[in-house]
Length: 312
Image (cartoon, rainbow, N blue to C red):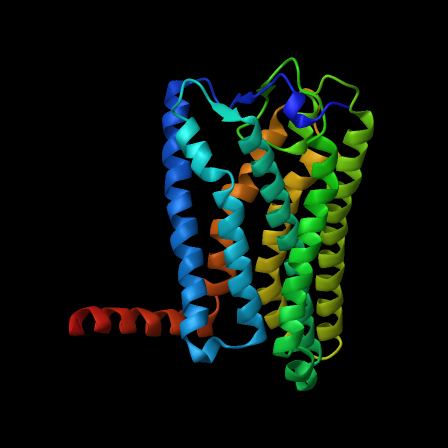
């Protein structure tokens, strides 16, 4: 195959979501307001966990890393979505397109593994409370985060090496608002059947494997708690139901993009908005604002900020 430098195509045209000017205005306001919420919400969580000593525990350490990943995943696509939605020509250069799809899969793969670490943390806290601090010590948490990043990078690189070497010499319209492996490989000048299978096997395996592992883990936790106490089951279900909701919202688009894409409909294009825009806003609300300890810490940090401004 020809290398990427020998490709005729030097830029791609992003088709976007809508051709209606009125709808584009609505999308611009929607994306802009949600992105502000993503940035402020997730950064506030990170700073609260860092500066409040009461939150220096395994659960909040993993939560702060999840917030950084949510922010990073959104930052790979949403700013360009906001800039492009009102643009007539939605052009992205070949290097920018490759960079975007690479980091989307690094962030996405890392977040999936981190979600597994978080459900293991909840399992240990609920089912083995006496051994919680022994099992979920700082070393274990750091190992979880490092392993998540390593797996995320491997996940992205193992697909990227196939796509970057494809020759692009003809059509350059990407049928989406961002660059991703399934949309970009369709534009190659050669048969991409093998590459498509690699992407489906890789992204499909990690997304669906993580999804089913998380659901099985949540069910196992609830069954374990049920055998101990009906009151404990009610409390655990109240906590985990919100987490399960986030899991479904996050992994449903992955299923339709990488495992079972619609051949004629653009449903997957709209569903993926959940991953870039909706879920990163919901995670702070579900994982923290429903958490009494986190809400108290946020109020404490807010008072400290206000006091610092008044004293200065």
